[in-house]
Image (cartoon, rainbow, N blue to C red; front, side, top):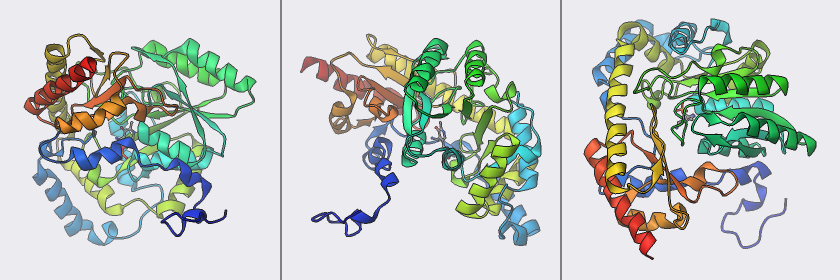
Length: 407
Ligand code: PMP
C-alpha cells in the first residue's frame, strides 16, 4: 500500500487492510461523555461490581500469594489452570452442560475467546451469521478478520428458524462461505431476549443439517430474575457448538477470565491460538478465582447480583411505563439490557447529542447492526445506575424523545 499524502498519521499507508474493521465502536466513543457524574448513563454494560464484598476477593488474593505465590506469578498452561477448569465444569453444570475438563480453554475474558475463534475460522470474505441485532464488539472482531456479518431475523423467541433456513439457502446460492452462526441466546445483548427451548432445538437442527458451527456466547445466563432460562444450546449438542462463558458478570470483569468449551479438534486449535496470543492466560487471576470458588459462597453471590439487577430492571420497566407509555420495549428476564423501539421518525443516533445535553446517555441501535439498520432503536442498560438514577434517566430520555416528536 502506498502512503496517503496529507494524513496526519505518518504510518497511515502501512496498516493491514483488516484494521479497516477496527473503527472505535459507538459504545466506546460514548464512554467518555457518559462517565461524567452528572450524566445518567444507560449506555455501557458495566457490571455493578460494588455488590461484590471486596474482602472475599482480597482474602482469596492473600491466600493465593501466601500459599502458591511462585506458581501464581509464573507462566502457566496455554489451556488454563487445571483446578479452575474443573470448577468451570461446576459453573456450566448449572446450565445443563456436561463436559470434560480437557475440553475447557481458559481465555482472557470471553472477548478474547471471540477473537481466538475468529482467528482460527475466518478468512476474508467469509460469512458469520448473527442475530439482528447482535453484540457490537463481537461484530468488531469478525469484521477485523474481514468477514461479513449477515443478520438473521429475530422475534420475541429469538432467531426465527424459517428466516435462518432461507438466509442460508440464499447465501449458499450466491456461493458465499458461511463459517458459523454467532448467537447470544440467553438475555441477549442488546435485545434482552431469550431464545425459547423449542427454537434452540430447531436452530441446532438447521445448523446440523447445513454443517454450520454454532458459537454460543453466554455471559448472562446465570443472571436470571424470574426463574432459570432454558438450558444452554451446548447442553444438547457437543460436536457442533463452541460455548463461551465468563466470570465477568458473575464475579468481576477486572479479572479478565473467561473460557471456551469446544469439541476436541477445535479446542486444540484454540489452545495454539491462545499460546500464540498470550502464551498463557494470567495464572494469578485464574488462581484467585479458583480460590474464591473454593472458599466463598459463590452461588449466594450470584443470587445477590440477581437481586440487584432485578430491582434495576423493575425500576427501568416501571419508568418506561410511566414516562414513555406509547413506545414498546423488550422485557428481559435476566441480564443487563432493554431494547427500546422509537417512533419511525425518531433517529436514535442523531438524537444522541441532544440526549447527552439533557444529561442522559444510551447506545444507538445502529451499533448493533453491521448494515446500518437500527436507527429507530436504542439499547438501555440497567446494570450500573441505581434505581433512582434509572428513573431519572428515563425521565430525561422521555423529554428528549418527546422534543424530537415536536420538531
Ligand atoms: N459477549 C457478550 C454478549 C458480552 O455482552 C460481553 C461483555 N459486554 C462479552 C462477550 C465480553 O465479556 P468478557 O470479555 O468480559 O468476558
